[in-house]
Length: 90
Image 1 (cartoon, one colour):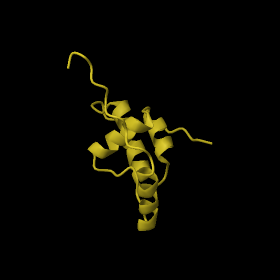
Image 2 (cartoon, rainbow, N blue to C red):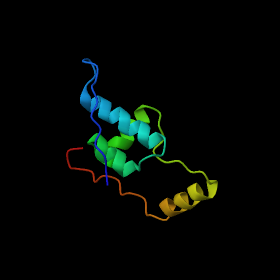
Image 3 (spheres, helix red, strand yellow):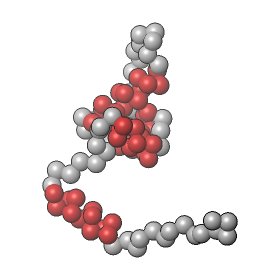
């Protein structure tokens, strides 16, 4: 379920920028999930995470250090990525 909000913006504020800023703030405050905020802003999750980083907003917050440790263990269990194959021209 969702609601619709209609607001008048100052003439110099782009509606797309306003939507991005609102979605970032709602995510930062924990009011919406990362996926919902990205969708609301009109970006992929990956791009939205990059935009959050540019504003110094963490995409992932770990209240319990053990949660971070578990995620790091999972990541370390994956094989390392393969280096790009070299081509004949260099």
